[in-house]
Image (tube, rainbow, N blue to C red; front, side, top):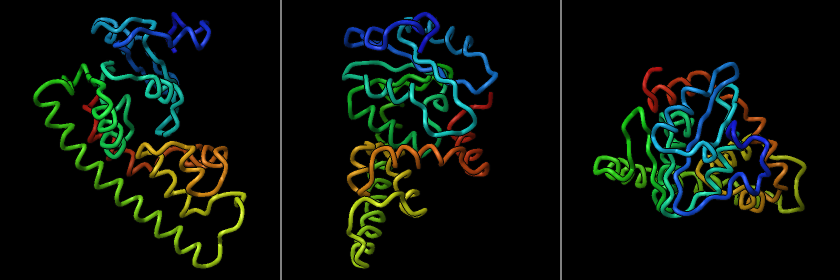
Length: 221
């Protein structure tokens, strides 16, 4: 949430006309959000429309981002300073970037001059859409094969207390692909709290993977 709206009721804080221009700021602990906020305001984002996230390391659970994504409507514009502020990996960029495009939401990374409404931006996100379809098919196929194998072994009872390491990894991949937590809970026959717990326990990504993804998505700071 923004400094100006931190104490406002949640229902009022995110109430806005459509279409709207909103912004997202993510900082790590000890980093000031002011430069990002100023850049967004200068680009036409109202301060009350800026979602502010404080996250440590490369954690994939960003509640303010989830609130932002859930509130978007066709015709809205999301402005960020760089792609790596909103997306934590190339895979995440492919999936969520494609989702925004299909929902009719414009994405503008100011410092990188990437605009999904421009000719180059439409080409970029068109390619991302094709990659997202391939990734989603791969993950769903792998997951369904694993669940079918489990049923073949007779594991069709009630909800297990937790997921196996393999199931947790599959659930995390599907979550990163944009699959809602409710659908994941139903698919793996566990509670939503179990899914959220495993997402949180995923914690920081492995340094090698995180460094590669973040470096590819972002410009050098």
